[in-house]
Length: 339
Ligand SMILES: [Zn+2]
Image 1 (cartoon, rainbow, N blue to C red):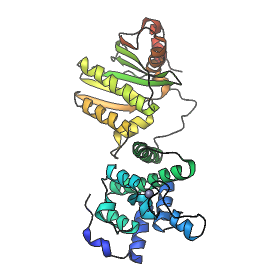
Image 2: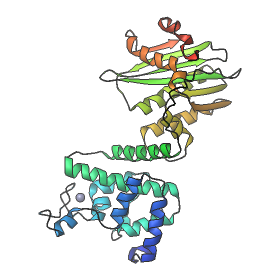
Image 3: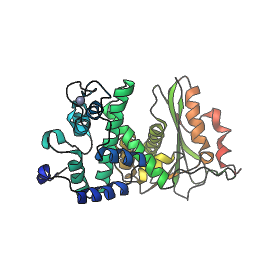
Image 4: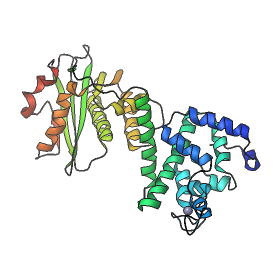
């Protein structure tokens, strides 16, 4: 990112402060992040140097590197851990090298001047998660990796957007949706994932034609388990791969994972592994003449769910791919039933 060279010697005026607060409170990020960054900008963070001045700690030395006095700027980018964190982040920041004398306020003003919500949101999320990692190290002795930090920032941002946009709704208990037939010529891909503690994870995929006939089913067990939303994305991706192999032209994908659908439709940068799988889904969807990915309630996704569970019981093989496991055939009309 480009940062104006002139700002290095410029003191932050109160005019800047007012604009800065307006910028901060308008950002589409979780309030806890705004409050944390507001404290940072007010220089009200309990960094070691502040605590030392108040005689609350015996020394002002950074707990992460043990090499330097922990000021706000040291904690956020001068410390080797943070310096690497900034450079490895999607913003590719390198304030320690480029602007060694810049204050946090100076740097934030420069970011705000870019006038891109996505950059600004990411910037404050990175500040927040860096401070979170610092606290985990200082108070709990826990080291959080850079990758885990990016994942945490992205997850928090995604969940905030999902809640705000009303994607996370409490299901209405009296309406149970059922599997809907697609239009003629369109194939419906239902996918689901399952995680069993200590046993790994699994996915289930079923592709059906407009009349409900099964075109192909897949059940696969994995010895390792990712987070459930990632497994749901992998299930969806496997479904699309199958549809591509079958040379289907018009497909509708359905998942009961709201986070997956939300991540798929929104354009916010997704730094997590989930983001990578979603990119793969986007690449695959270009092979179809028409494609949609929609959220469907669990009651309309029963067969995919059963296939995912079946993967655990299908001990001979970690993978089933065929027309449908005979053990489950009698259950097929299950998600077509109207409750
Ligand atoms: Zn340090």
